[in-house]
Length: 222
Image 1 (cartoon, rainbow, N blue to C red):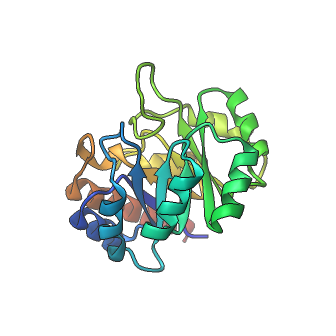
Image 2: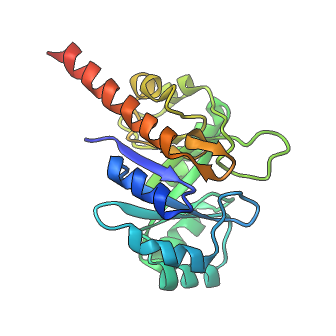
Image 3: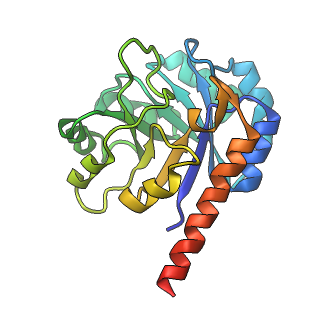
């Protein structure tokens, strides 16, 4: 199955166009006021027409209430709701039922014990995103540009599907894919020139690195 590639925290038409034209399968908008990538609902609605199938739009949220979910569904029409807060498995199931949309649950990983949450959410979320725990002092649940020890993922049950995030960049993406073989990767700060500012050059560099890695794997297999 082809690698899913999500570029998250996009805020401009230019950045969306570059990501989509190079092969992003998912685009992410962030609605969290403390984030430098925050978009108001009217901003998301204005950018929504730039994202067309088969590319999917995920809206990233942190512990939203039901009213916000309803407004986002009505005004933005995302394909996926990505939950980065303290949502319980019961809350994730309720959000799926209430909105009728696919739900991604982000799980913060810092030790092997944190992988136990995978079993709790695997059957209630449509997708799992494994991200690094936020650094001390950060108010952002994701997009901090830090990674966790990917060797921990060897402790996951076989055939567990997940998208990997945290500290991935054009410089290490080939290593990430070779080491842990995630179903997808999710980048934000790794393709930014400053917090919240997506750099088209870095987005191009990411996809160039992915193409080079794929070509190398094909040569080894032949």
